[in-house]
Image (cartoon, rainbow, N blue to C red; front, side, top):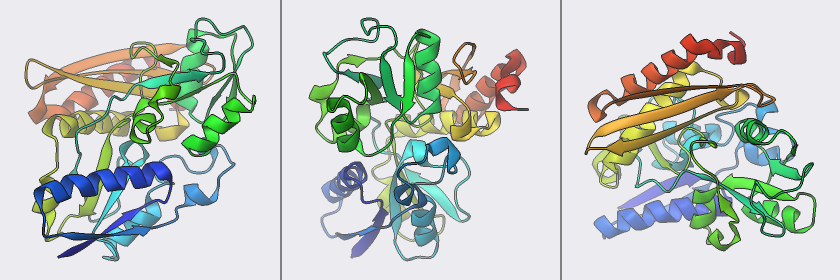
Length: 302
């Protein structure tokens, strides 16, 4: 049997795809895999700020269309790139064990966020990270930074930025963990919905669905379900600064903490909810409702 996998061509996308293939090979030794690289809108528009070119979906749309049309058997995505409403006929088939979702600081001079001088230039392409930085330290200058991991690290070394903020998971998957200056605390820097998780997407009617489901990690899956339900209820996607973090305690008690920020980071509204895995979707929605009741609609343009 041969399965065709759709993915982006970046080093991180390929690393994630190869990780999924490795997990599948560990369980099924009679399957061959072909990787089909598909260029997305986000890959073609390399310089424009993400929030201005379409937000969520710009790194997955063309790949998911290939899945829906049967040109590839399944797709591998970074979960945080996947819209809450999947392409018609597609489902989230599996979520392998999630990496640490935290953000990290990488700085010249190995200085932590508290140690950086006033007016230091911080690079990020994320509205969420921009707001969180300015909420924590409003004397920083935040400038847009796009490109793959190599490109971002090179721009930092070349002196365009004093520090940059990235996801720990991506650095770990590419073997760049030694560049990390500081892991940013989750209570201050809530990650993006789905950060650190990999999405395996397939057709709802896919005949080999049990093969993909074999690599699903139950805890990671339901954490992602709660976070995505939160995002869908709140709305906004990449256009609004917000973050969420889930954790599990007492076996299957799921907890979600979330926050929405004003664009300049001056205001922050927090909420929290908890419940069992069997109500993960409702847990996320309850957290969203609390945020909306506390005034988040002001930041959402509602």
